[in-house]
Image 1 (spheres, rainbow, N blue to C red):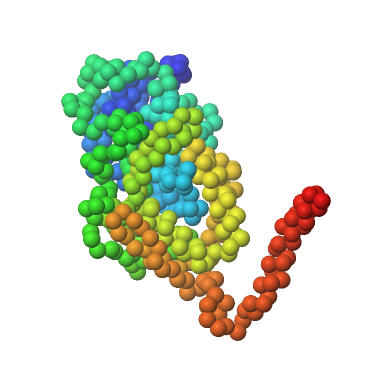
Image 2 (cartoon, rainbow, N blue to C red):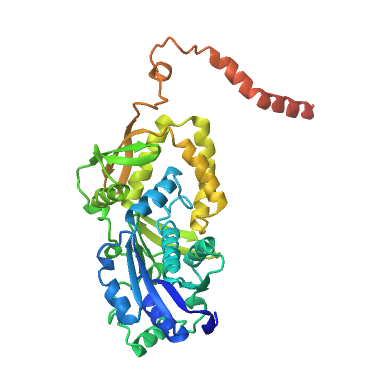
Length: 407
């Protein structure tokens, strides 16, 4: 634990939940210093309404609630989606991509307020401690980090409740939702509690953003999404800002039960953990982006970019958003997106999002004269014989060698 005399003022990443409320009071009690509470508006909706009052009532000396929704989607979500990033084949990294922006703004507030320390509510078992702290040190290598979950002796839920009661911190009398959740414009995640039984299906009442697919409309909905340089810019012909566009796709996808994922993932610290996610807009966006790439991106460029997706996704998951290796990959990826201009048409129905059309007026590599199965004047099918023989040469040589060995 950092020595009390070393800490004069702290910025706390504050969500308003029980854990960060206890942390706020604990920081005041342990260090006797000023604490600035900071909450980032990344699309949590009415969850933010009581934040300021709760923080001040718990002892915060100052409260920041900053609207970062447009920056979040424009500068973090969209670059990630230009890469088609996905972790372990299922997770669209909704929590992972939010942490570097929260940490960035937290460090900006620390500089403005003259704070020498920052704090967060991540546990010593999770990924978020790594994501936050790698970003902190990127912006200020000398910053002091106070991570209460790695320091205090409040090592059980009962201990936290007793501490809250002792310090007049309001706690819910009935635990209506036996799981934890984290929400932003890209997704909402659920973990812990009843989800720790990996065989049990997640209860329907847990879901927030999506209808049960069985209860979704019986009529499919078609949606057209336009892309410029790999970024979505319009839905059904209507131009939107990044945050507006993702919010709109969240609504459309949610109505049709799109974007539910139940995943047993590998945490950075080494253990497996179950996460249940709702990512309706992101699921639509990734499907549509891939569709426009199919018609505009060169085959070999796509092959190289796709080979980098697992590494790129791992960097985001593990907290290396500001690392030189992520920036290097982003430069390559963004160069590949200069031609990704066009429109994708997707079909939403009963939990599914499926591409049914794609077009590009300026960058299409689909040439009907070459691709048609009808009679054409540009492709000599006899040329394929030489192509096959050249490509089979190494296989034929290998077979000859093996045959000679048997003689």
